[in-house]
Length: 507
Image (cartoon, rainbow, N blue to C red):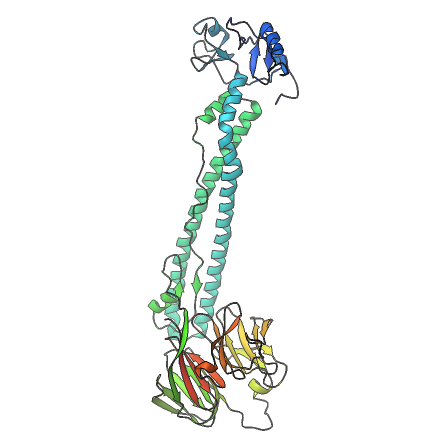
């Protein structure tokens, strides 16, 4: 592209030989299509030939000026005027009639365009592919680093909350966990910074090449381009995976030693993940009659002890998978619902024997769900149903969402930590109205729901989609309460006192 201001240099100052004839006649014209300097005779011939008669021929002095101030003759030290094609070096006017007499001389415009064309492909790759990808990768590193540090702060807070909810003898374990977490954070944040530094170095290299090329192109400096052409282009490989630390995860639980704590503190980038459980075709592995009278309730403690209650019996029994009684415990009330705590204690919700519905029977008659902290000092209502039996049962998942059986509307409701309803499940997969009673969370994060009306147990997966796990074909009739043991066995109890144990997933 010609400069906007055309400058004419007299031939006497910038003599360029004709590129066509062999007589070294000075060229006064320049063909922009052929990029050749022409003497007057060759200029006329150029216009007579059919293939070139329409070419744009201008005076040699109208050709865009090339900056040659950085090029000097190696023999005389003068500013170079030509490029000797035979010797491949810049030469001055003295050289034309001296040591390089008879050699083919090429003007610097052609040399500039040639070098520019050789560089252009690599420059385009850097400008439009390599540099944008490097910047994108750097932004991803920054984003993931921020998420990582935020997650680490959240984990630290969760650890603090868990610490204050536990007994005093866990203080030393807590301090060791925080120290371990801090050491891991320092090491992994250093990995982020190292990768970011490496990417920034590559970005600076690319930007430096682009800056030098644009500066040479703007100044039309053939020397700068020739120097740039000899440099190694930073054509970094794009698309390779950078080994960044994964976001950590933390699972609060019942811990007895620092080794158990470290097992809970799972960082996927450094520890191998346990083999996940998977669903299998359900089979009944045991079926027996509860030794207690009335509708059977159940809970399984952290030690995998299975306890049964009966709402017409004032005792609890611990049983094995065959129904053999291992222990008995006298209680002061007839239990309606049982729940096992992390510390091994059992919570008993007594059966309501009053016909006038006293004010303290909130579970059934006021439809409220209240979250209470470990020592019972703080309580917060998270759900208020629409009437009687609108909060029959509730379980909380590790993601903070709570699943509540609202018997008043025959539905399973999912609420978040703030008590906002996220979804309401009212229909079975076959379109029947659900009659939910008991809920339990299994080790795969699924919600299992006992449907009293439809004689089935359903799985509610992570996407809150429901499908039947076991039903009438497995002998399920009016299921009520559910529990899952450490072997992935599902325990189902019934109003009539029967108990089924179902194997439905691999370990």
